Length: 140
Image (tube, rainbow, N blue to C red; front, side, top):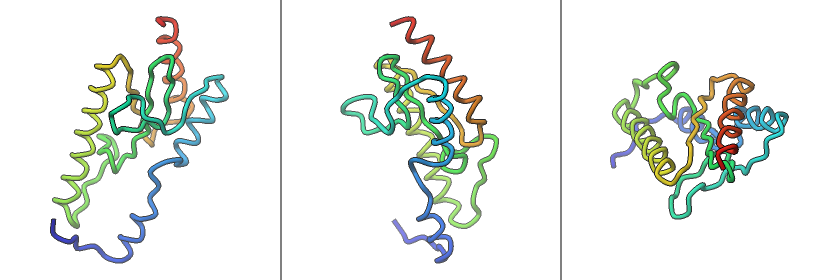
């Protein structure tokens, strides 16, 4: 892999990007907790599968992933960088493919993967997640 043509400013900014416990995750967790739901944070729903969900509702078998618009290629907000365009397109498309693979593996094991975009209103997303968790709990 050839080195990236990256400025020190860009490199510093990218190194500060959080991958867990982001503001969006905290807001979603607060809303879900206020709705009376309890969950595990940053867990692997399936043993042997190296994919970590942001929130896991074990008995209901629901795994919630909070996806960043840039990193996961949001159809509404994603932008394609002009600098190192090939690298970033490969990276983001790889993330999308991994997300699809994760969703398929979870579904095959009886889990429901829920994707929440970082731009979504946390209260609306929490209500959507709450409805899915409660519906699956009734089936169990």
